[in-house]
Image (cartoon, rainbow, N blue to C red):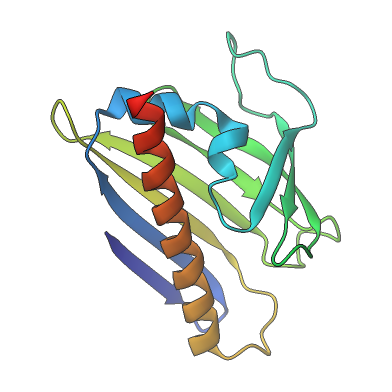
Length: 166
């Protein structure tokens, strides 16, 4: 696994992790396609609920989500939409504060899946947005984002392998 985090002088964030998984891309996509369950692999996403259920035979793009963010049982409900959908390859969602797009680290999360032979794949998880709590020191922001990516990676690996074995 590799993690990279950049914070520009104007507080733009580009954080990503690349995880190599010992299972076929089709098995991982089966897990990812269950959007509500897969997005809850993020340690801050206690629950993800579709506000409007998409028709899986058409497109998930545009589907509205409520993302219940929690840390130690406390946190806000955030809103988002599925922005892109590439069947079998990945998708991107917005993750926004209900207080407005200029509050609470508005960002886009993307999940990109690449096959690596018959029995392996690579998952890239990225978060890009604008950090709004500019009073927080940059090293603390880096540590926080590193922890979120690392915890997500651990949960994704564990859940994907369990899902594949069943």
